[in-house]
Image 1 (cartoon, rainbow, N blue to C red):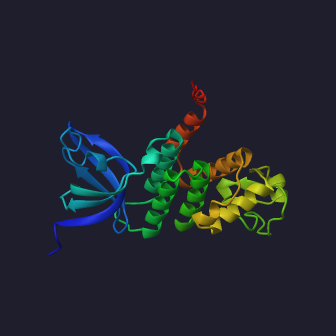
Image 2 (cartoon, rainbow, N blue to C red):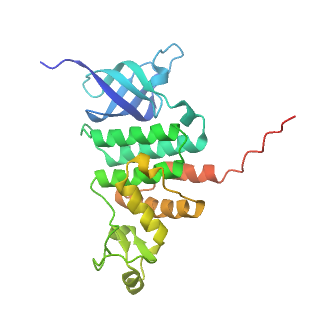
Image 3 (tube, rainbow, N blue to C red):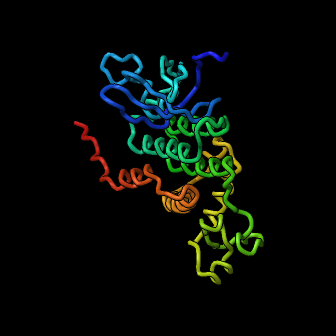
Length: 260
């Protein structure tokens, strides 16, 4: 007979308050996939596990099997990402990655590669790497590991190799389109040579190598525009955290500190 309790390394994707003191956590575990659990009394001031129930917390959780939801009984922190939580842009990027993992996975289907991908993204956001670079690297590798790899080598319409010139991006068709096909069908968005090369490089690189890519504001904006359209087409809905990222970006800059 299997044990009623088990341990699971997991990252909290999101949390939903339940009743007066409980909370339902959506955990993405390394070995068991996505799991919904109930954390009883976690919102009480006396709860010792309250800090382990926040989104983007990485911990080892002690769980007890329940009839409908498993029950959180203990937790040991592995990473809380303090620098990420201290910056609006970084934490929004972290929520973005967590939201996409939630959208791309189903309950109780193990996927250690996706767990490692999310952990790598959060770790590098916490280390101070540019949120836009981390998110684009994450987008491409999430799509690749989930079976939705965008076409970046050949035209999705005529299947001819893409030339080193301005082409087009067609999310609905699965990736890049050559200029001739885009002109003929009047579809797609402009895809610069720099953007195409950058997407190719990010897709085949681990993060250590991806971090070497030089991305200015113009390129970052183009990459974000293309990847956001592609991901939204795959999941068939808007990305809530992407709207938050846009709102944070639109905030006026903080005034410079005055040194007496």
